Amino acid sequence: MQNINDNSERIVLPIKEFDALSKSINDIVEGCKLLNENAVFFSIKDVMALTGWSKEKTQAVFNLSDFPSCDFGKKKIVLKTAFLNWMSKPRRRKELFPENKWYEAA
Image (tube, rainbow, N blue to C red; front, side, top):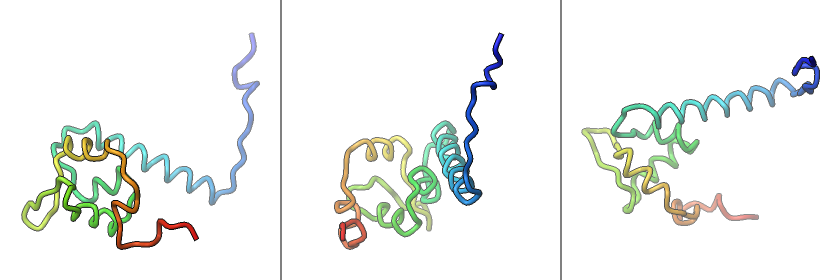
């Protein structure tokens, strides 16, 4: 009987690339944990963890007129189901961040 490990190939990555891959995997795992929790609302930090957007971009999205956020004291929050529904509709970067030119190809 052949051991399954005998046929495995070794993957060699430089440490820098391994760290980047590890961080990406951890971000995905944290995002999945957020979706599975019993939380009813997402904060700006939660949305940042789920999407990978910067704090500035996430705050800009929370300020969009069609984004279903609300103010809770000094904090902005979004109902989890409303956020998932909003995210299910396709959007272009131009629609989300019209004031920025970072999305245009040079």
